Length: 149
Image (tube, rainbow, N blue to C red; front, side, top):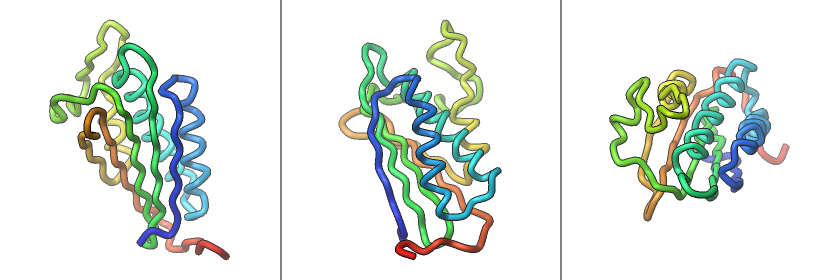
C-alpha cells in the first residue's frame, strides 16, 4: 500500500538532472534509507533522467515527469517518464555498451547502471510516444516513518 507519493515535471535539460536526483532523494529520506541506498537511488534517477535528456528529444527539450511512491513494505517505486521519440527495441537498448549516440562519446551503460543500483527496473512505452522507466528498491531498514506523525 502506498503511504506517500509525489510527482514533479520539468524540462528535459541537462541542468535539471541534479535537481531531479536531489528531489527524489529528499523525498525518500522519510523512509529512513541508509546513505548507500540514497546514493543508489540518486545514481539510478540521474541515469534515467540523462537518458531522457539525451535520447528522447532530438530536436528540442520536452518534459520529464518523475513519480515516486513510498510503500508500506519499506520500498520505493520511481517512474521516470518522457514524452519523446521512445525506444523501438528495449532488449537492444538494455545491452551494455549499446548507444544511439556514439558520436557524443556515450558509453551505452545507462540501463545497466540503473539495474545494478535498483532491485528491479522495467521499461514500457508511454502512449502515444515516449518511455516509462520504472525502478524499485526495497530499503534494508525495518522502520518506516508513518505519514502524519
